[in-house]
Length: 93
Image (cartoon, rainbow, N blue to C red; front, top):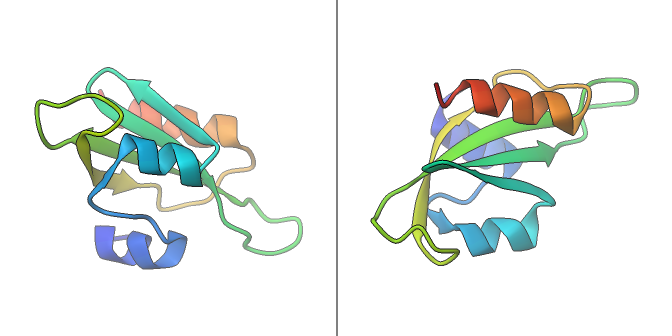
């Protein structure tokens, strides 16, 4: 899935600020120089509904108001937010 497809499907902002993500999504983590997100997107009853996303800081401002850009989004949905975050963490290596 491309960044543009992910932005449309999951309604992900790009570029944005950490503060904006924290207001819109419940699972947002600072992880070194990256920002990880586990989002919920309903895909149907009894189907996995969580996705992972990784943002990176675009400037030297790493505060909650610093500009971040979307790097990658999971191609599959996960059964819970923990697996989505674990996927996102593995993308930062």
